[in-house]
Length: 187
Length: 191
View 1 (cartoon, rainbow over the protein chains, first blue to last red):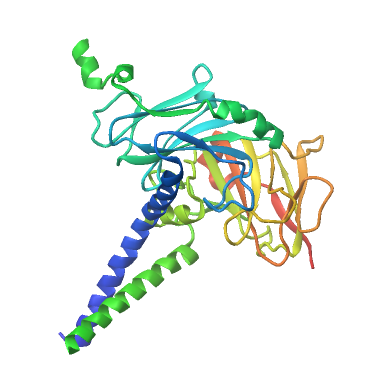
View 2 (view 1 turned 135 degrees about the vertical axis):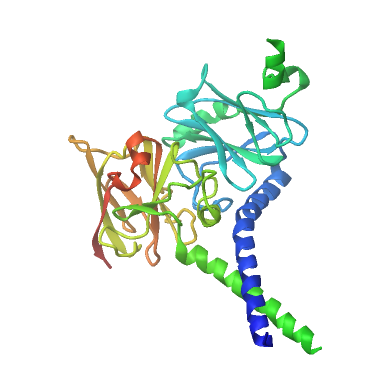
């Protein structure tokens, strides 16, 4: 084979691999960047509450100025994490995102029980658990969204926002979410 | 030595082409599965685990943490209803009725994908704030110069785009995204 043909084939193959790798890595790298910056400031498995988005805010692209965001960086490497939040009108939701930015779970106030949204998040190596959301890796992100009508409404929501919880589940609390296999054996 | 240069140049060229083509894909290909309703565009796989390589990458760059379409549908307009790019040097009239969702908003963003600094601390119109007529329709204005009501400010001298968010859209919306009735964006005049 002529050298320039070999060269061209190599370049084409290499460019294809780099192109696909770049597109695959990009969302993961962006998520990792957000997590890295946020984790340094806020830690994991605890909620922090963002101010209303304005033109000065540059943390995440295209934020909604009408939504109060509360964020929890999830680390399920040491066990499941329970995420819960009280609801507010006209709209509240909890969304769980995987490390590749996929939205793997969402629940809104219309599905709340006793005025609260709640979800148990587990890691890829955890046993199957009824009602739990299993992340494909040990990291992810929980995002609570609340529609805010105006600045006064935003201020009034502050106490409610701080009632949101994002905590690693203790061995005692884990009994509330028995693995499917244990339930089967118990019957 | 000659071989080092030969293969070194090949690696460098492959990297350059790979990186450039990735950037071009993000800029020019846009959303892989885009659906349009007038000037409003959406991708039904945004935010979901069904998203392909390009959609996931583009959404991460332009709309990180988007929700699945059955929870929220996002439409973006970069042109007015006649197909002309949206510009802060123009005044637009938004004509429509309440969007088919439990709650909705229309937000303006600058070319850097952030909220626009106009000095007015106002960035959107929404279901809670817009003033409707008796027949349920509304007219809103998008311009750099202030309007009396239903006004969404933008900055002159730069383009902008609009994102309509429909939270808990009616089932007919995500079943037929192209058929969703969304506001007209009518260009009134430009300076």
